[in-house]
Length: 162
Image (tube, rainbow, N blue to C red; front, side):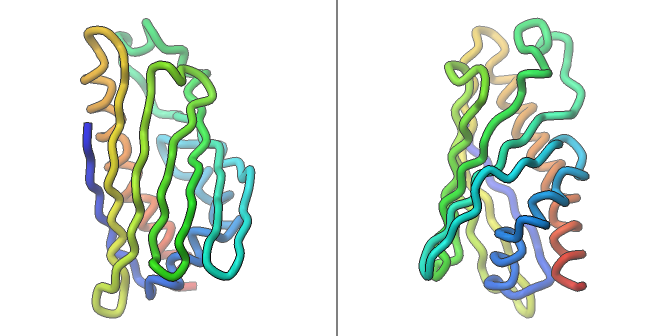
């Protein structure tokens, strides 16, 4: 399932990118709903690129149909992001800690000027390989991502206006 999510942010694109790469901001994301335990695994950079690897855990409630085939305690993954600092975009690969044979996801995050602020656009795909319920799980994941994007943007804006 393909998806696109937009966020409006209160800082210039380069400033937004710096906040996204700030280890303290990564840690603060642990307080957001649906995803928890943001664990910074890697944050490296040079003059033109950066790499950010963060382990996350899905913490929202799941339907009984999903929990019949998935253990909620095993819904952890690494978001491996490679930033092009000049182009203001990052390519993300989701690396499941468990169920790697059932989930694949990649997305791109692009920061664009939007008046005095930034428009952050996330576009990507989620593929769940599960007989009968795969499409429903994909829909639930994308719905959860959209819901998560709202408080994440609020948190980003709080950091940008401090």
